[in-house]
Image 1 (cartoon, helix red, strand yellow):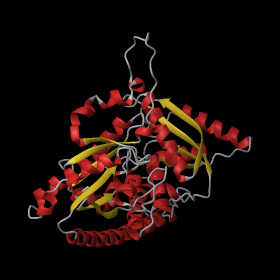
Image 2 (cartoon, one colour):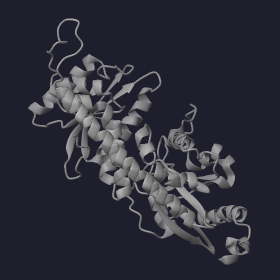
Image 3 (cartoon, one colour):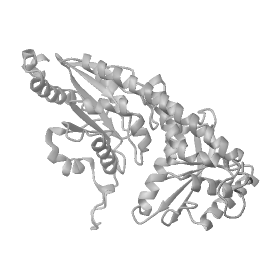
Length: 416
């Protein structure tokens, strides 16, 4: 069986490969590779080189044969200089055929974005629930790629049907082993699905027991500061780190602001090109998003591409069937926001790199009114104002859902 996990103690040297296509220009490809490098770093790899090519994905080798030879030549040169390249990571999901053909040329370990994310999830999974979800996603990824694991075993012809025009012969060891592995994996997947179904039933029961409390879920792109915010609001100790997917398990805490109790949930972060199998496998975890009364969409405003990250999260929420839920958008990391101030005599139009935070706040964000907050969880900037606004918003939802709890009709200021 293929081992997915890259040990955190084991640092491997890696190369990244991405494509510039009609739907993905050079700037976008560079941003994707920046994120892929962060993923590689999170998994314990050290990226030393990037290769890009302006071409639509090749069905056989992903990149063109000339580019593949260029990558191979670089790997050989590094080997001669005793700087061994441990792996090559591709920014898109590869088919079994592509992986097999690329490995035949490069002769090093090949990963794609999906398998790298699965590696990280396997490293980060702590609870039995998360481990089960990740293992199921791994098997779903592995199943259509089994054949390449047995290419060293040839099918043996022969028998009455092996002659010209015949179609029936003796089964070779490669085919037999492939069938055995496929059956083992399918049986294992069936068992894991049963476990997740049981976990799902337990979680449904748990949610039913959380009576008369508004549920608030933190959602957002990975590494935007959800866990840090959770720790501040709930005064808890959820693991937070400047790495992608620092936490996988859903954490639920009871929070009281003023006299208003509610449940606050920290969910797994989303990412561009998030594998569908992971979304499916983490259904029981993401049900917290579906069951929430209010979504707090946390955004890293200091990220140069935060608007696309917003779109990725909103698309994923829509896929979960939760796009109609009440939500607020919370721009975090205002302390890290930076821009390049233009000279007064520069009359060229401003780009988003030249816009100050105040100017940005006066764009489309201003139209969101009380559904838009700006904070720094790290510096604890505007946290009191956030709590005040959250209190009022959650109180409104509580009054609508549980109209007989009159004590909640007070304002947060009255309690303070």
